[in-house]
Amino acid sequence: MELYNSGIIEALDLMDSGEVSPEELLDAVFQRINSVEDKVKAFVTVTKDRAYEMLDEAKGERGALRCIPLAIKDNICIRGIPTTCSSRILKNFIPPYESTVTKRLKEEGYLLVGKTNLDEFAMGSSTENSGFHTTRNPWATDRVPGGSSGGSTAAVAAGECLAALGSDTGGSIRQPAAFCGVVGLKPTYGRVSRFGLVAFASSLDQIGPITKNVADAALLLGIISGHDPSDSTSAPLHVKDYTALLSEGIRDIKVGIPKEYFIEGLDPEVESAVKDSIRHLGSLGCSVKEISLPHTGYAVATYYILATSEASSNLARYDGVKYGFRAESKDLLEMYRETRAQGFGAEVKRRIMLGTYALSAGYYEAFYRKAQQVRTLIKEDFDNAFREVDIIITPTTPTTAFRIGEKISDPLQMYLNDIFTISVNLAGLPAISIPCGFDSKGLPIGLQLIGRAFDEESILKVAHQYEQSTEWYKRRPPL
Ligand code: GLN
Image 1 (cartoon, protein in one colour):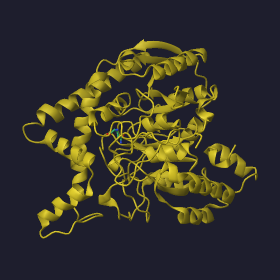
Image 2 (tube, helix red, strand yellow):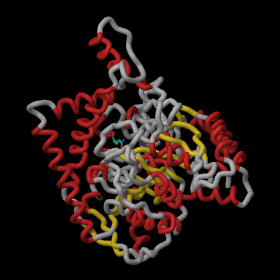
Image 3 (spheres, helix red, strand yellow):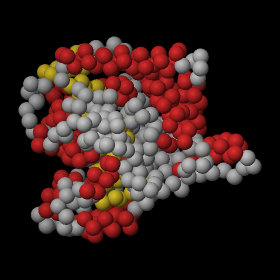
Image 4 (cartoon, rainbow, N blue to C red):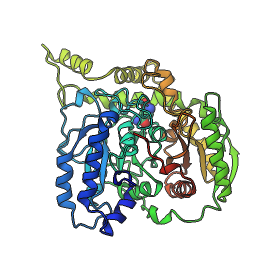
């Protein structure tokens, strides 16, 4: 196997046994970036100098990520490195502070390879909303990698890093992981500090790992999780050793299959791969039963009211005064207006308008408050289901990766791509997407496993044991 295709744990073994040096690993990753990045376009900024500086500092240290090259989504702040959110409005923004997640990775000795592309401010499902360029799916470069963490998932799938971090507000880690044939984990809301993550919708946003296998996701989760005094929504709960729990038995695990997720619009090839996987889990000893999540049909509408409302408030800070880009103009009001008109792309403007409308006097009760009430019903659906089962399994996406340009002019079609991932954010639950097959075009299919709040270990161990008894996760794109 090529060195750049290795996962974290594999690479640590190779370095610990002396077979490969940290320099050789980092060189292999940058050679790979040189040879494929033109085709994939996963990065906004490649940080080669920083990576070799970090290598010098980390050599000889014994952290859990000693000299492991990782990529970070470009909405997570790293001191001294541009953080753009793939937006023209933040094009020249260099954060003077460090996010808690990257601080924790640094304490364990990781090397920063670069900052990855996303849909502007994480709004989208394809990276086509990036203010800079569209990332390509390494499995078929005329197709999208998914989004908004499409740069991170494409970089992992293409071997341009060993693993990456993304953020997930409505599916942005899991949907692109499914499209790119890699593992993507959205932790429970509150499990991971959001300090230093540029806010999109604060009651939904969560940072998580994107990796080549489940064990690597467990390792990264353990490092980035835990209470942080700088984020009042981070939970003061004990963080388990997820890696050690992966091989625990899964015979007593009860798996629920929600009937509302096998609907019209679900691609028959995706459906059959997911059903095969469910049978496979049965053969591994899990018991399987049908369940119901009756408010599923309201999730997309609820999400697009709440997420846009929160975004309209969070994005008010980009006024040409505090950060980044400023348009030259004759007076203050025109400066605000022009900065925002030129700095934001079409999707961001659409969402600011939708959210402002939903929060305005006279509409607040009908839209925003109603959506909050429906959010509670969606969460209660899961509470009820988790009285009967331990984890819930669904397809991650209704289809495999679509073509670049196919949905960009129809926002509703684009929004429907998240139909299976959004409820999880509304309910604040953990969920993971893992590869579970390929369609007849050779495109990866994702399986989503959803757990109880703060029970990441159950989905991780079932995902790990499924993965290790299949071959899907070993395939690499033929770039
Ligand atoms: N695709 C969804 C949206 O456009 C989710 C994005 C995300 O999770 N950041 O809002």
